[in-house]
Amino acid sequence: MTVKKPREKQKNWRGSPSPDGLSRKNEKAMRRCLVTRETLPVDRLIRFCVSPQQELLPDLAGKLPGRGLWVTADKDLIAAACSKGIFSKAAHKKVNCPDNMDELMRRLFIQRLKSLMGLAKKAGLVITGFEKVVQFLHKSRPLCILEAVDAALDGQEKINRLCARMSIPVFEVLTSEQMSEALGNENCVHAALKSGGVTNLFVAEVRRFAAYCKKEQS
Image 1: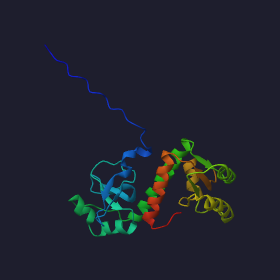
Image 2: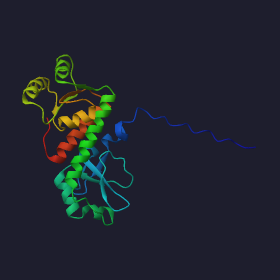
Image 3: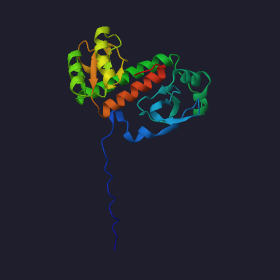
Image 4: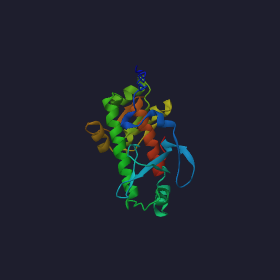
């Protein structure tokens, strides 16, 4: 006589995964910075890993395989980790840091922000165009406003006054060309982002990028 083992219940995923492959469960995860030794939430740190060729790779999305090496999102601390051999010490082997680390980090941040904006548009969470953004501000409350760094001052002033009155954050991190590429629009200068999983992650990445650059964002 054989006894059948009860079938294990398949675990269902509760909720939907967040964009770019990041699980919302990781939002409150904590890691220790290799330089300061301070334990911080992962959204205030940057993950690095080492390739099979012993090259140090920034991993902004947290998707690359291998052991993570974490440093506070601060360009000076990352530069110190490279120059003082801290990455090599943590990995227990020789690690080659990119010579153009700061340039690489900024390029990867811009690429990630553009990718998230594209996902937000597909989700219907982005409103573009000066007049449409102003109209939306008069009738609703966006999560934030995104303005191109090369936007005209007169348009900025009008939108910024409305946002200041409503305590809505305004971010200036992408050029008009970069915003246009991300959203598939021509000459995109102003955008309103509605609250949602992708846009919440976008705002977190804007703040992490600002922390890395040591630049304040409202």
